[in-house]
Image 1 (spheres, one colour):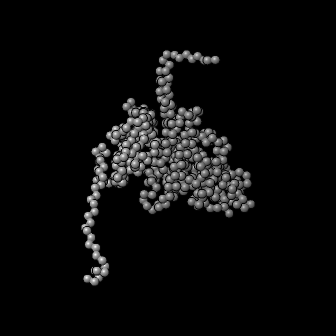
Image 2: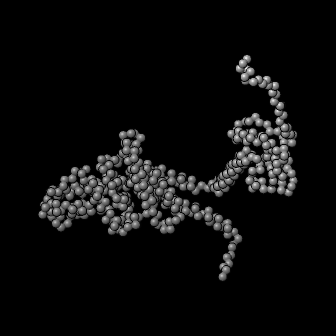
Image 3: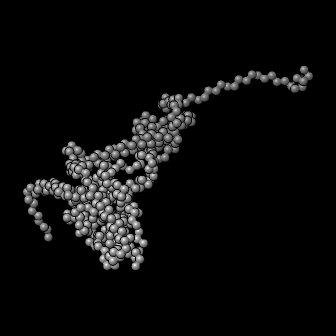
Length: 232
Length: 197
């Protein structure tokens, strides 16, 4: 029988470490090459086993268990009495975040109010055009002098000073009709953060004076006929 | 029907002292197993990683993980098997991540990408055949590798290995056989074995 037929059996016998039996045993007795191969296979498995023992039974470092015990001590050590609990820290953090958000929103709202009041003072001038929702209980009347006054629905007349005191959030500026254009321009400049040298006078001291126009001075004309002038 | 419960005076104090004593008991019990099973965790990791420093780190991590979950282990007699599996799993994960890192870097010529320097112990065992054996062992399937490692460790019978890996004795024997056979196939070219005719 050819040697190749015994190859698997030979390897298995070497791997298991068992003595060859039956036909394999007989073949190995008669075939020196297979006997040599079998011995080499046995040697190979022995080398593998000894190598595995080296790998698997490595010396354990002496530092391993002390290191583990030290870590266990760290894990088991209770927090010191002064150490704050996690929920206290979390609560303080939440409170700080709440305060910060509230403050930010408040500042934003104030900034928006200022901008809106400035816009109202300039864009929606005269105040009579302002939507009634913003000033629900006020009526607007224009005096013959051109000065605009606001009056409460109950009939109480509000002077400019009163109006300013009562509604500080939205200050009113009373100007004569002919200064409206100037005020609008001032408002636009104010929105652009440009200082404008405009002074608005108090409506109480203001009196309109009619325009004084001097009569046209025309010298007397010397009228001559065309025919006379040509002959001359 | 309402059930009445009698509360003994001082019961709360007893509960508190019991609550404090429980971790201490667990720690004591764990400590008792630590000396016995710590080396086992290290050797399993060392068998996978073939590096003493990495194996020590892995063993420490495995032991700490085991301690954290020690309360959840109902059957304490299975602690060894449990620890071996934890250690083996962490070691395999670390080996894979280091391989991925090596592939990603890909520049072994640069000194910073070279593997850690071998320890004296590593040098002692790293003869030529051992190097080939390490490589062949790395290519083995995980199940075969773990069983072969445990079989090679001193003091592990087939029954114990069967208990540790959670497989039957026959399966363990079969895995050991195939593991050795695969290693022999890979190492044959390195020992100059003449083929049969």
